[in-house]
Image (cartoon, rainbow, N blue to C red; front, side, top):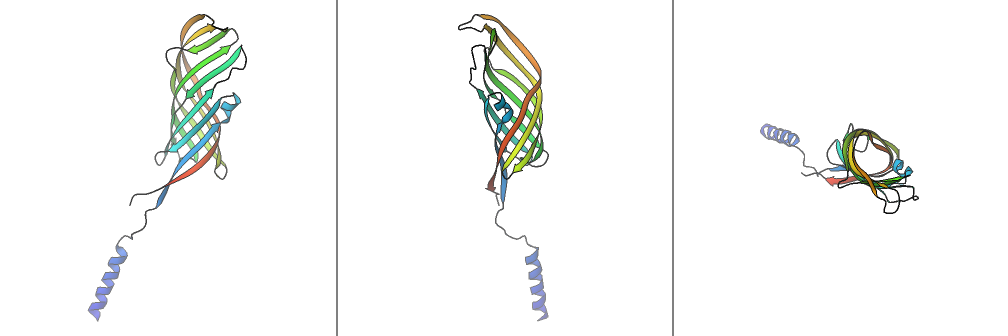
Amino acid sequence: MNKNLHCLLIALLLCTSLPAQTQPEESTRYLGVKTNLAAWAGAILNIAADLQVSEHLSVELPLQWCPWHTNNRHAVKTFLLQPEGRYWLSAPGTGHFFGLHAHLGWFNVKWDRDRYQNRNRPLLGAGVSYGYLLPISGQWAGEFTLGAGYANTRYDTFYNIHNGARIDTRTKDYWGITRVGISLVYRFNLTKPNQP
């Protein structure tokens, strides 16, 4: 009997020391869909998606488009892509983040006597940014972003009349603010099962 009791105790110890077999847990991944209210103030249509790619990293792809001609003297037509990689201090979709962005843009701007249009290639550049995502209610949040960096463009200047003659071609380098965002964000939590 004593021998059987020892065997039973050893078997219980072995069973409790083995890892338990559990179902794979589900992990969540952040996806934010947003629009920049600061761009809307300039009548620029825009939408962006921000997707978590690792524990602290996300990638945002914003699209901005302005097709308007307000009048014959003033108009800003533009299409801008500004992808950004973000490092979140906590988890993606919460709190503070730092970003590294690039920009690629096409433009046709009328201003008083002149019209400016990119030539042979888009505006190009890159920059760094800081931002903060503030929860508002439930899935909704506000995002505040400010970035600075470099941009380069080659553009033609025309007289601002129908079929106006080209005045000159210039190349311009710019250092300064490259990103401003006051965005309204809807946050999704995507779930995916972990591998066993």
